[in-house]
Image (cartoon, rainbow, N blue to C red; front, side, top):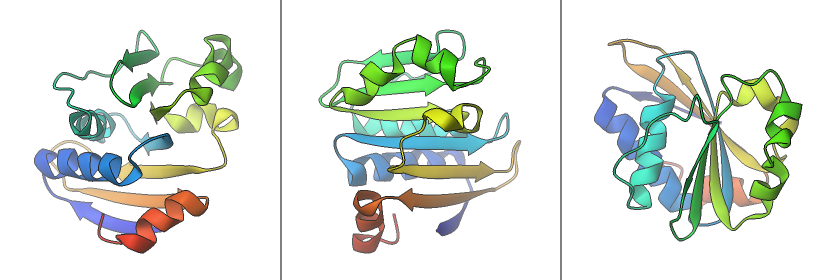
Length: 151
């Protein structure tokens, strides 16, 4: 596991962008953190790697689909009670797409998460610095960090 301190919103945006560029294509990023931790800021950084300028948390719509190459699917599980609700909106179909999937509040749908993924946990809120822990699950994600441990 990699732990780092992120001092500014710009740093969080840059981290999201670097991780998206490192993963490149089909992938899964699970975001963890309290309200106001910076999950959506991180997601904006990921989206910027795809050329997307405007991103907001899909709290009420559950998923935002971006027609990029590859596709980007940004989920927010905050309003879901369990993984069954996620599957009810076609989550299994999303997993089969050639896409990068990013899911905020991943802890609320832990049963639906693929075994191979990248977990990003953000601690802190408000004006404080954030501690970000990045934990790869599976050979593909471990390889990303082996090649560039400074993501």
